[in-house]
Length: 269
Image (spheres, rainbow, N blue to C red):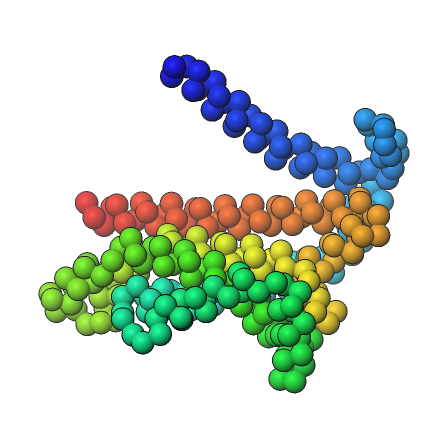
């Protein structure tokens, strides 16, 4: 019975890996492909036109990377800060309208993206935020916050307030108890919320286009039009760079979590 279960688990994992690896390999092949028409199983024309084009505009690519990383990192940081405060308010305190406030924090999940984009664009034009980096950061933040709040609520609920209360009993102040006791326990969850908010922001196209008005360039803004125009080789190379950036970000966050966990274990023992 156990052997049969292991076989099924291995089969499911194999199918999952196949479904993930094959699209990535296809993208890598398209980087150096000029023509690959159905029903041919191999590319019919090889060309490094897309790679050469990217290399010729490498300064623009670097600026694009810096812009996208700055916007997404800012959104992720603000999402973690606001999400942490919101989660603590919802989990640690009782106040009038608590359930309504909790429901309101999830509204970006419920409102259709197109409806939200049209409404927020009109508002941002009136506020002078349309076509600005600040406007793009704010609109990305609105979409990222529900993820951060949900993750931070789960983490705050799991940790509870007893350790912080014990620190207060032993003489620590409110801020000292939070930064010395609660924050280290919440840190891994905060990094998870940071990574989720980063992904949501880095992948945004429609809202960035609507609010940025073409003035704010991000990876998604440059990459998606290539898909629509049939320039699959350019779209593929931008997709590969996109994937590499995301893997590097996740790798750095994973490294930080590992170092933090080891430091906590050393301090504990």
